[in-house]
Amino acid sequence: MGDSYAMNKFEPSSTFYNPALLGLSTNLELQIVHKEWFQDSKTEYLGFATHINNLKLGIGINSFSIQNIELRTIPGPPEGTFTARNLVLSLAGAYQFKNITAGLSGKFLYEKIHIHEASGYAFDLGALYSYSDYLQISLSINNIGKMNPLYIQSSKLPINLRFGLSSSLKLGATKLNANPALQLLTIFSEKKNHIHGGLEIGYDNLVFFRLGAQSGYSTHNFSTGFGISYKFFTFDYAYLPLKYELGNSHSFSIKVTF
Image 1 (tube, rainbow, N blue to C red):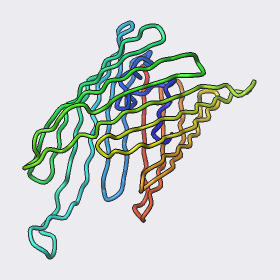
Image 2 (cartoon, rainbow, N blue to C red):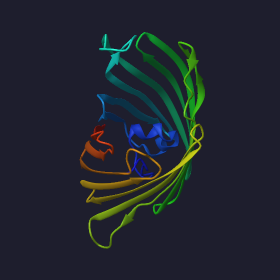
Image 3 (cartoon, rainbow, N blue to C red):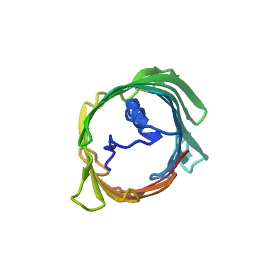
C-alpha cells in the first residue's frame, strides 16, 4: 500500500512504522517477511506480538544485507567480495486508553561492512487515535538515538516523522471493503518530505488487492500486491518496480494468528 500502512489493521512488522499500532493487536501473532531488492540486497524480518489486557507487547528482528560487494584496494580486478549487514532488534510496548493508544519501542542497532562493525541504539514514539471505524489518525517519530563509530565516522540515523490517516469503508451491501490510507513522511537528515498513499480492496476478509504510490523517490513511485487470509493464516505479496534498470523488488509475508 505504498508504505502507507493501514491503521485499522495490525501485523507485527507495522510496529517499525509506529509502535502504537500494537494497540490493534488482539491475539498472539507471528510474522515472517522476506524482501528481495536490487544488487543482491535482501531484507528479512521476524516478529511476534502478544498482549496482557490493555498492554500490548511486540518483539522484532529486522536484517538487511547486500551481498557480493567487490573488494578492491587498488584499481583493477576485484580481490574478492564481502557482505554489508544491518541488524535491528526491537522491543515495543503500547497501552490503550479507550480510543487512544500510546506506544514506545527500544531498538538495538548493529552494522558491519567488510571487517568494520558498529552498534547503537534508537527509540520510536507513536500515538494512534481511533475516531471511529471510518477514521484513524496516527503520529510517530522514529530513530531517536545514536551509533558508535564505524571505523572512523558514525552512521547518522534517519530520524523521521510520520503523520497518517486511514479509513475502513464497506462498499454498499456487498462483501467488499475498502481501506484507503494516506501518510506524510518527513526525513529530517535529508530535509525531504514524501507522500505515501495506498488503497486496499478486500472481499469477505478473504482476498485483498492493493495499490500504492509514493512521491519524492528517484528509483520508484508505485507498488501493487495482494493478500490471502484464511482462519489463522495470512499470506501477502507486494511488487515494487524500480527505475534505471535496477530490476524489481518482491516482498513475501506470512502471518500466523494463535
